[in-house]
Length: 65
Picture 1 (cartoon, rainbow, N blue to C red):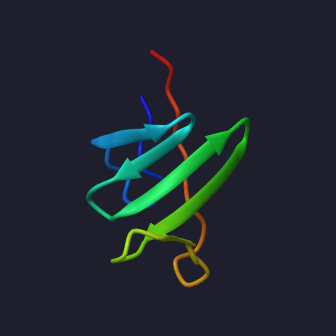
Picture 2 (cartoon, rainbow, N blue to C red):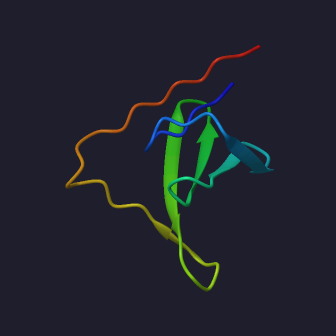
């Protein structure tokens, strides 16, 4: 089970290989090995890199099961 690294919700959808979408905070994120990239989903559907400098660090929890 994977949780959203921004809001912590577990109700996320899989978009592609190692790529997920959180409907609660409208972000997509990719997990490859230990690398995490987070993107904002813009109104027109484009992805922009998530800027979390004001929020501090993000936590990633990946559970296999």
